[in-house]
Length: 383
Image: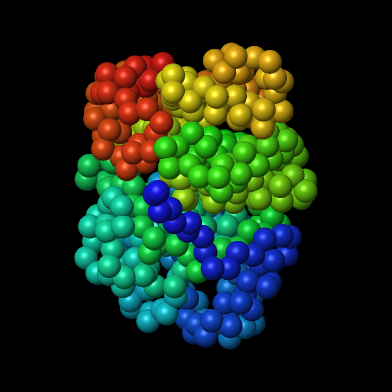
């Protein structure tokens, strides 16, 4: 029998208003000074000040690094690391979505293990746990606040590095839907489809287990029921809270079952063209699953059922087709572009994109391993 491992932060706070409890929890750990890793928009709308004020009330000092790029880079990690070292911080707090969380993981990992973040590309390349990281989430999609995945763009190669390391798991994750109310519809849609992608890829993964299956299917169900409402009515706290749970469940699934070629291919689009990750995932998702249908049609039928589709009595192949149609319809309903060419992707770049996708660690657990030509064909279909 194969041994499986299940990774998750030790403590996970969820629910409206839980940020206030998080500040008290951070104090209880005994930390004295935190490096807050975030982006400028969250500073401008006052979210970061809310965090720093709550920390100050608990006698935890902080300094803010707000230079995180939407696709965080090796340079972002180096700059944040220098600020951490200059200020003698004993912990890192990320505030935001996947970009600040991933950058913070890179900073915290290198702070303890040394070297350059590029040294840790791949699976479990570090020797020691990172500096303690607390991840405060403001979007419902990436689940980076609770995973061991860290995606950093290597500017020199124009490649998104997949760093999958047990030592990058935060010690505390915070999902307060009150922090998600200000997110625009486009970002809500992109991050929500990212969560759906995580759940689908985890469910068809070769490393799936009964635990990850349960998490993945429940995540699919909630996304299908709540994402449209969260996009159309951003101030609906109930829909926001449901999406927070959905993305967390999807994170539990893929953090342990891993992902597949949707992510392996989306990473290349993001690294090469600096495109939004969730949108790339949403566009690629039905195309990659159409390829995977050859070996996992029954599982795609399960996903269709979780999305609320009527598939009883259908063949596995027909049920899988219903799944693909439902995914496409959800994307349309929340305003996702229909092809990556609309985002600036070019046909002539496909060979380079495919070559790099085949090297991405996320593809290792795809249910069917594609050839170079097959990856190229999927990219062409998604144009």
